[in-house]
Amino acid sequence: MIKDAKYEEALKLYKEKNLKRADLCRELGIDYHAFTYFLKTRHPELIAPQNSRKNSDYAKDARKETAKRYAKALKLAQTTDLTYSEIAKQTNVSVTGFRTFIQKHHRDLMLQRAGMAASKRQAKTVRVRKRSTGQSIFGHKKYKEAIEACDDLKYIEMTVSEIAREFGLTPSCLLAQLRYHYPEIIPRREKIREEKGLATNRARGPRQSTIRQYAPAIEMLRNTEMTIEQVAELCNVSYTGLRNHLLEHHRDVVEKRRYKVLQFDSNALRKA
Image (cartoon, rainbow, N blue to C red):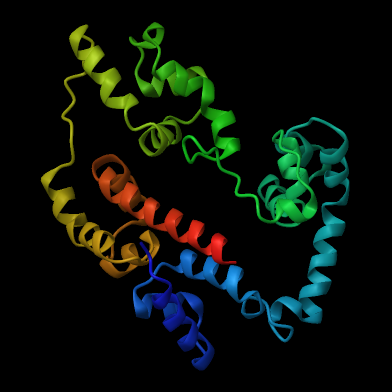
């Protein structure tokens, strides 16, 4: 369990030193996101003080311009069932930018479109995750049919990549969803394919060179609360490569780190 004392110590240094949160967390070896959550729930005034850049005149003007840019798109999101991509195309705005705008400034609308009713105030505290899997609601909706197909004997003769293309998805993205949220499906379907003589004879498991490359990073993730990004930077390895290696070959580390964050979240909410 993550101890509050560690975050109290970080809080004291955060107040005394003029350090960025990321630098402070790296220096103390604590998780950046967990510490930020700690500040938001216990000391929200430290997240966005009145004299910060977030509340400067320039920032306020920029937010007004952003709201103006997405005004037509926002109206369509409120009054139609069009997807974000369709709305962005109709209003000539970036779909990524518009989605981020909705998530940041209109979370109640985002939840409403996902079938969840919440007031503006409630929406600020709702974590958009599907409790049973930890998967986001939107990810669950997007990959649901393909994931069910991966676990269906009707599709057993197809590879995961072929199933992904069958449902109009990117193979690597579907594999990532399976590895992170449904890790039991891949070995189960591979065993059935092998019994049916459908195995591809492809070598399984990581290469020895890959094991050696990521070994220091995996050890650091086991024994510290640093983020994957921080560890990848310190060990000079690819963040994406490290994340995928972790998901595919070190599920115990993933579950241990996820449990720690959930424990901290629940304790913080009880004490808030």
